[in-house]
Length: 82
Ligand SMILES: [Zn+2]
Image (cartoon, rainbow, N blue to C red):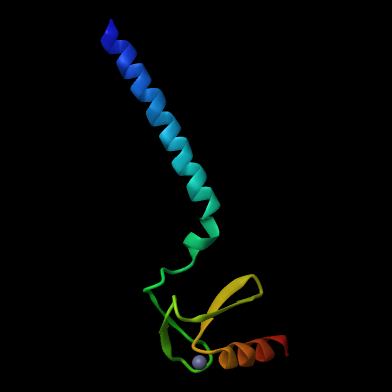
């Protein structure tokens, strides 16, 4: 009989741990969509590869782009705004 209680308690703890994990995923959903800091990304202006952690990020039209420098980010924005 005690075994059932222990299993039930364990299930409840697992349930809460699971729920917390799911909530944490929800919070960082947007960050998770971005590549990790060590991932190499390409600058769409000068076609150079940089690591996402050291890249200049710019949101254009709801999408995040990575640039080697602020200069390239500005060029890209000018090109896309006409
Ligand atoms: Zn560049």
